[in-house]
Image (cartoon, rainbow, N blue to C red):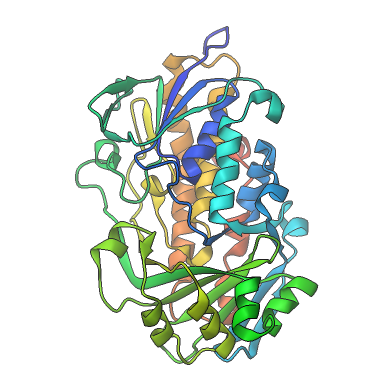
Length: 414
């Protein structure tokens, strides 16, 4: 390492959750530019996302403001049958057990907060460094990882000391890092329909809030899983958003028909009538809320077999580009936030551009097995299970204390 601090140039490919979190971490010390293929409105749907303690403690360290996102503190899990009869209920003391809460929020609000943390004036955040620059409508289509140079969609090139590839499950740059025959996204056989319904819509449709919604406002706030329990693998995952003024409804079912739109995007338009047909025998309140939802998005659930490598030269894969997993343990975004936190190694005193490849190797050495463990936990709890079986892997998933602690534990094992 150099005796004096050096400001590195950093390129982040993709402005999703992992990419923006990485930009926030690195802007404290380095010059960061984010290149996004899509419009500024990318990924602004009204569906929900849950962050478990392994990510929330990192978010708080970054200055995340839960009041801006209307985050709901989840206090446990409740499993019900499709008629809303209680099957299993447990309080889960996330704060006491893991040191941070579990928070749910609207995805658009969460991403907006990460964008603020990446780009707001440093004095507003109480940190050093300069805001990251975000360039929209100009993604990376090629990379020379040894040189740290990307080719952009407009044909121009950009070069940096570090290139962080966070361009999602259908990453265009993954083959350049992990090899042309690296694993590709693999379908799970399940599709997820995602909607968010407001309290006003619920009252208009039902005359009042359903009992299970009202309980979320007055009692303990749970992630609720409504199970068909008839062998059909149909479930609805429901939890509060925007201070419980909205409910997320993730409706998961066996894929009926493979479609290019739902394979290539997690934000494809869905058919409300099809959802009403698939879940017609669920509790009338759930069916009614599906009926009044204004935005229905479909997503064929996919994951990727563990990659042999995440890095090459000055470039490293993170987030879904490195370790896509289904949402059935709610950990995909959280593991991406963990990836981003690992770049604190680049903020240490004395780091120079010559140190970058070795630091990226250290990051991969920790992050790749950790992501693989969470992927395997997600796969183990994806189909044919019910009740408390879903939560048996919570300890391993939620117990992560950051890159420095992980390196200490790794070195202690050697």
